[in-house]
Length: 95
View 1: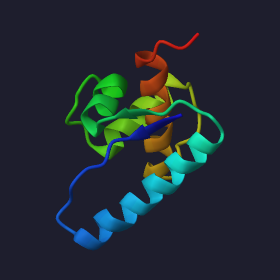
View 2: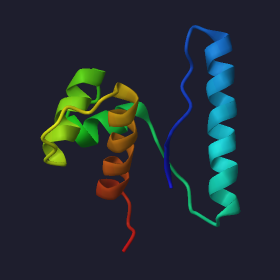
View 3: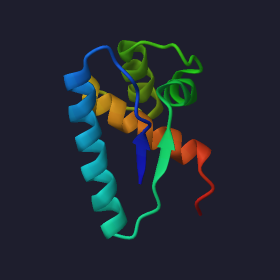
View 4: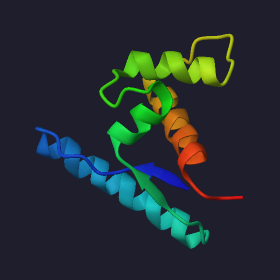
């Protein structure tokens, strides 16, 4: 299982909610006996686009190209999730 590392935003309420979501996802993964790999946003972007400072549209564009998708990915959240999976595939030592 791969997940983006926690980041610190300016909005405390959003950061707290994201912490809850990450925690719930990680508990679910552990309950299924999955190994959890965490990647920084910079590492994810760099793995997919070659640029750790890429914006979300650049990530979506490259995910579409890497996965050879004909249709545009409907949401930036979906392309981010796929980018994390691609990053994990490129950077982990799983067989």
